[in-house]
Image (cartoon, rainbow, N blue to C red; front, side, top):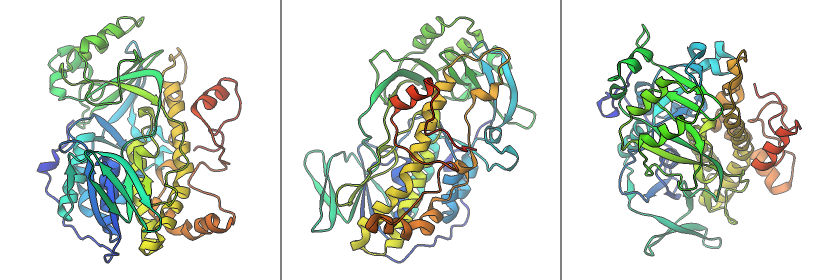
Length: 464
């Protein structure tokens, strides 16, 4: 099942409501999903926005990702984006298989991965380049553009002058009332694992008659994604197909690190009972379309703002997620909606530090919980599926608190109480985390060790 190319979609009538210009200048370094959505949201609340990106042109790399309902809700202010999001989304089903290809459960809706399937909002699956394209197109329609080939190498702020800024490669400096860093994630250490990941036209895979017979469209024209689970394997066959492998120490987190499919076949040849159908799919991958991607550990980073709060990290720069979380793009979009709302509530240039610090307070515990969720999902998916084991135990848990959050409304409801907490120490408790959770700082190493000992962790509580 295919989705229309973004360039071919006839747009819905667009009626945008923008707040009056507020005189606030914003610089954004990084034009990924988080950077572009933040640019749109800051423009919508009246800011003057400028976007720098180190690459030489629009992003066309990447495979696919999940966009949750909490992010899609941000499109309520962007009628055309909402329309195009629906048009390009893949309406897939999912089944779970062992690493030998044996089906553990029949195809089901993605909503079956939630704690309340009957009432769950839709979970969207997108081509990363196509989703990026609809954001980029929306930028142009409101008069914004990305300045490519502009690599940020340093950031600064001047508290007395009330500004932050960026230093670009070769020396140019630019200042603004607020400087947002959407790239340059925090330092990391290797998890010891990597994944092979790819996206390519399904027609190439279907040239193999055995593959075509295995991955037939359903009667309603929908595709079924197979998640293969085993001692070392997590696979999305046909549509997206990564394998979890041991990191050889030679790769980086980069879409540019291409390898030959034979490298994957060397790995699968070591897996007892590995199915021939898996190798057949791998052999159909174009030789220049397979990425060797390192899985990196990054502990939660509670402080996203600079000392004077004029330089702020967002998206991957603030909270990098493992692919197993399925939350990176969703949380970057939530960041955009939250920060823009805080800027609008703060009201003027002098109050920007209040806005950014409140945004940090409202967001950190939520994304920290979701980062922990991704760590555990990776561990769960990388353990061998046992005969007779309920296959749903191998799948992710997606609770209502993850899906039904509205970051813009949450900012409006909690801004002043959060600000009072920061300024005067009055009590404040976030409610955008699992019910009953009392947040405790954690590290990846400590989390995994505590789980191994059977001790209570941040993951305890009502995650449904």
